[in-house]
Image 1 (tube, each protein chain N blue to C red):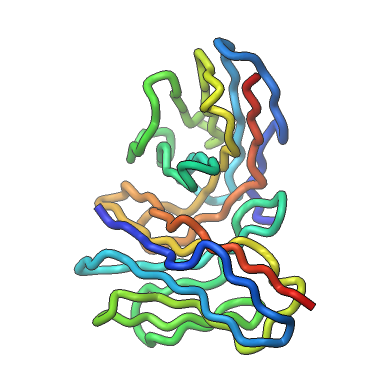
Image 2 (cartoon, one colour):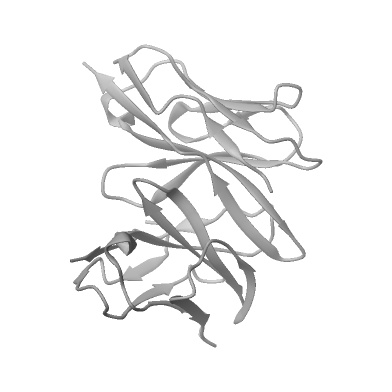
Length: 113
Length: 115
């Protein structure tokens, strides 16, 4: 158990819909990261937050957005969903900074029908 | 931007045999390297990391990796594998500046252990 929790574990929805994925970091970690894992793209970095502020952005679509709240939990919002958005979405947390390892949650499997 | 190449997408080995999973990274002044393992239907777990110092890094579950700057490689090894080592293995490099950080992953190597 990494100490990072993600809900829900599975999510099935239809094209055009909007969903919210939730992540709680390990106690003491200020930084939260979101990654997408799919068969064709592999593991791709989406976005990083540190203590409520956006710090780094990767290959995140404009239809996707995220935020980190004062209690440090984070939400990833995916809207106007397409079939290609079906993937495993991981949240990770760390103390922040390039040398610190990231601890990964169990992931949310999103299926768009 | 950094990149990571895992040279083998699948590696089948027999139980108790040695294994090496290969990883090459793009060159950079400072390199911070990680190996993660993903068991079926689970998240990623850190096996080991290289930040600086000794080029031979020991991790959990009997795995070790060697950092080779001249060959820009960070290969993962285990002298004797078990059925329980069946999983997907990811090599990653950490990059970023001033608090911005991300992991850049290779495509993964699926390790299958045959009895």
